[in-house]
Every structure is written in structure tokens, then in C-alpha cells.
Figure: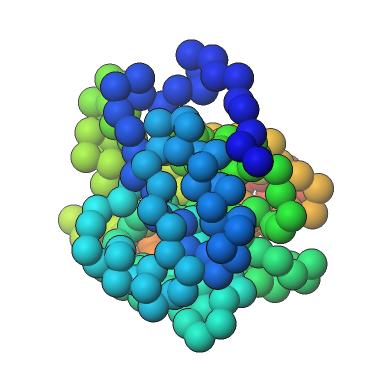
Length: 244
């Protein structure tokens, strides 16, 4: 049964733009319900029910966001995510069915931007989608270039680099790095990072920010960064320490 959503100006991502979403989930009933629900909010939803067919569709056309169920027969959602991340930084929301946190953590480690455990309220999924699309879309007056040591972030191109080496960051990792670069040497709380990078309030026992920070650290190190360090202030948040 379709769910009606009261739309406000703040809800709309772009009044003149329809965003394309690829939903890959083997639950056909859920897929139809979500497709109908999301399509009523300026989202063009394409649904596929296997990992294999989802990857084929992903290769055929350009999408703005991917919604991916972890538990699927044949090629799992994690297998699909690994394939996607070999070629694309597209925002990805994982749908998880298990109560165990391990699937969620693995999904984030493999490059997912966010996750949502089943069962969920479709409005919550819509809110997550809008938050990610707003964050990954064109930035208003985004002309600033942030530099700290050998790390550079160009807000116009939505790109970051270390000594000229491009960093392949997810949208969430990019936003976390930008938050830290804007206030070098100052602690940014996990609550602030969650609201800024994920577009949602930090929930109890939520390790999403910690996992994204771990991924970001690894990418900075592999790109050759040795001077600036992301440090954890236990129980408070994270800060980027400028190199000497």
C-alpha cells in the first residue's frame, strides 16, 4: 500500500531534478513497495532482484545512488559492493537483515556510505537518501580549497588529494575529511561528524563514524600521507593534527 509523505521545501533535493536510484533486493514485494513509495518523491527507481542482474543494470546506465540488500542468494550484496567500488564512488546504502552488527561493519569497511537494518520505516530510508544526495550533489558557493600539509581538498570538484595523488573517497569519507580540515587541531565530536557526513543523529552504539574514520586513515596512509594524523579523543570525537 503506497505511503504518502508530506513534502516541505527542506525535503526537496532539487526542485528541477529527478535523481536516479538503483535498488537491488531479492524481496520482490519490498522492492515494489519501495519503488512506488520513493518514485513519488522525485526519485526514478530501477529495481533488480539479484546481484548479478543489478551489476548488469549498473553497468548499463548512470545512477545517483545505490540501495543494496546484503543477504541475497547467489551474489551477495557485499560481493556487489566490492565490484561497484572497483570502478565507482557512487553513494551506497546497505539494507541489513541480521541483528548482528558484523554485516553492517563489513559493509562500511567495504565502502558503503550508510546502512539501514530491516525492518525499517520507508520514511527513514527516504530521509537517508535525501541526506546523502544533498551531500554528494553540487555544493552551493563551493569555491574553497582547503589545504593542510600535503592534504588538499577542492570543494569545487569534490576531490581530495595527498601531494597531488587523488584520494578515492566515498561521499561520507569526503565529508568527514572536510569537517576535520576546516578545524585542524580541534576536536570534532562524533555527533557533529554523524550529522554532517551521514545526515542523521548519532545513535547509541553506532560505530559508523569510527569505521569511516578507519577507512579514511587507511586511504590517507596508502596515498603517502605521513605528517597529518587523525587522532581519537576517547569519548569526545576526532581531530586532525597538523604535521610538524
